[in-house]
Image (cartoon, rainbow, N blue to C red; front, top):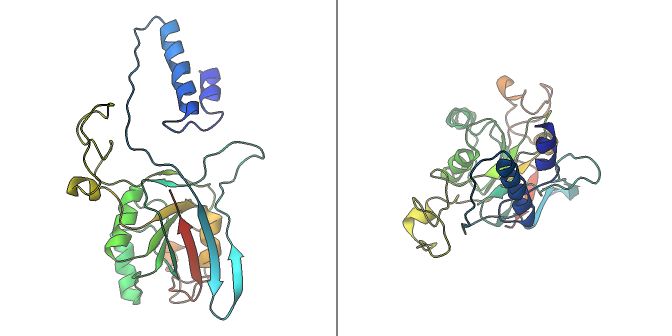
Length: 250
């Protein structure tokens, strides 16, 4: 078990890549060696891969504050998949940031009581508010420009999907994505409703903390401070005055 685990986790193996084929071949070989009947099938679903992303903090009254790292903490030389949200749309924003805690309905109610809106702004959330696709959807419903979802202060960057409406290939909902299968068009209502309306990407807790430390506005509620590891007297919920310059391409 230890040898298999080490081999299967030694490097990334995104679906649809040669590394994934190698991982599948190892599992297949192990099953066959155990005397199990095995078979393989080929599918051609719509997959999402990371392209380019950048993140910087700006202020209207001064030069660039900082370029923020989007890399996950890692051992030197280890191969990693660039942090990304599968099926998030490409896009960008230069806008004020607002900290939305876990991005839940109750967190937005708290912001409303504080008189803070995410409309046209970049929502910064900490992972833990349920499915990450739901976090993005709730921000989009409130007209946010983009979403950054951070790992906790003591963790790394969590990659994952933000597609809506359950698992499976969005172009073949309910049937297998084989080579000759019927596929829905991208403008089909059943397809469009599965994709988030605004771009999003994962960042580290360290990156989120760097943003929140520069925010003004109402002070962080006491029960919002643990996720980002900030002291009581540091940071607000925003908006701004710091601007987040965010670009994302898949």
